[in-house]
Image 1 (cartoon, rainbow, N blue to C red):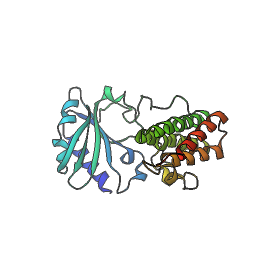
Image 2 (image 1 turned 180 degrees about the vertical axis):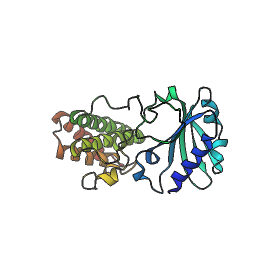
Image 3 (image 1 turned 60 degrees about the vertical axis):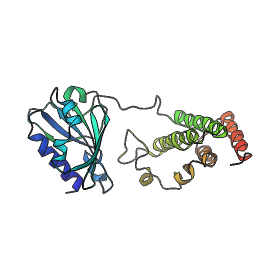
Image 4 (image 1 turned 90 degrees about the vertical axis):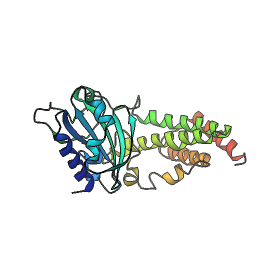
Length: 256
């Protein structure tokens, strides 16, 4: 058994011995998609507890450290923590009551342990996964162009970090969405983060990430590659394409 899954079973054994716990749900590569688990995975889970026990399990770590000493931990949200075990396993978890869990968006959970009288449906979420307002070629194409345009203006202003987030971050996200729409759903897609595992899904000639994400001083070069990539595959509206081209020419004319 992979050490991650063994640790999760050990945690399950700890919480199963307590009377205020209801279930332990594995998530991500420790959930229903265990085929993508490897030595670089972290351990994600939800602990479902009785009413009134959320704060205790979200703030105290004795139940967790009983499986292996913790060398670091902190509360990253009101109902959850991130922690590092002494053996190098990194864990992120949330603690919820049954009622609270119903409002949390998640997918691909696996019941590692549950009480015999636990309510059904704990591994399914009724909450909607956050999505863009439209999931169409038109939307993602025009969003990408908007990010290029605004990003280049910010780069010309000297706001290189903000520009990088727009051009090399948000615009590239829209490129990935366009690939998904044209090539089909990738295996093991993370519905919360389309950037996960894209290198395994799309070869460099399909998705030239090294050229699209060159770094802090590479915003104009990234915008050039992204615009050319879009124009080669989709009909870029002429007014917006020309406006971005003018900004690229302005950038070329300026010293780095």
